[in-house]
Image: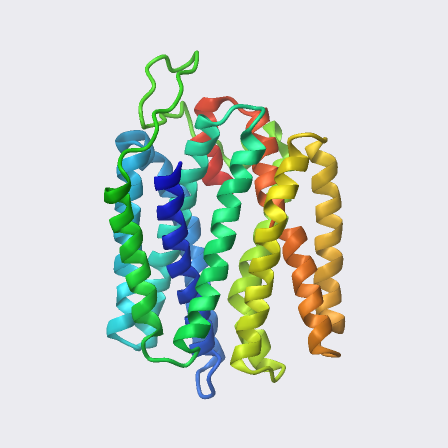
Amino acid sequence: MLPIMAGVCLACIGSAMLTTAVSLHLGKPGISPQVVQIVLTAYPVGFLIGCLVTRPAVGQYGHEPTFVMILVLALLAASGFVFTDFLPSWICFRLLGGMAMASLFVVCESWINLYAEQHNRGALFSVYMLTTAIAVLLGQLLVGLVGPQSPHLFMVAAATVLLALVSKFVGGRWPALPASPADPDPTGSARPVKRLGPLALFRLAPVTVVAIFQGGITNMNIFVLTPIYGTQIGLSAATTVGLVTTVSIAGMLAQTPVGWLSDRFERRIILLVQGILSVTLCAAIAWLGNSSVPLLFILFFVYGCTALTVYPVAMAFGASQLHSRHMVGASGTLL
């Protein structure tokens, strides 16, 4: 799985850098709140589109070729920020970036679900989530090294996405997927029988849908809005980047132990505890975050440990409830 994880890691590093860089730029004085809202909304809209269009692409071309096309799209989106600071064009770049990252996750997660077995699915997902957590952390560290206000920040982010594309060709082919009774001829592609809509998926795996819905609402916003939140409450750019880095470190450190627990204990109980703690911590950040910067860092750290591990546990639980032929469609719907 090393070639897959290397490509995912590098692409996520670039995406994390772009998310922070765009948010820091939008936090500058003189930029209309309406423009900020539209640019920030473009990414989740693109993310939704990517979830919807990836399943047919994987079914037609297979996981590996689709992965390459996604990285090319991500590179085009990242390169746009290098050549212009015209904010209306950034809407398009963020839209394409959201599409690319959603498609990347659909391809990788559906491939892992098809490749993994019941006894190691939680562990493999924890490795995958650990990789993305490390990538987000490295992205924030690179932002700090290059400089939050550096004119070269977007260039470094685009170069990182380019390295992700290069690593795909250096790393060789992906491992073959195992055969299943419904698909006796294993290939790199997964051809689901039909797409699972939200209602159909909810009927099959309601706990998974609810858990991922909660995680999606909170986890995406914590990375997108924290730089703006830090600016609004008077934190320096370095402190704001430190908050995002803290969340990333917490999520990275918690992935392996939570994955280990999810393979040995009832995943629904783990998800219940994670959900209650995540909601409590969100409220604590809103109510107490202004009172003390050290307390804010502690709250962000505990939140990262709790909320950033909901998704892999929920996906592992959902995969145990679904037939393998539904995995690509299910991954797209859940994302």
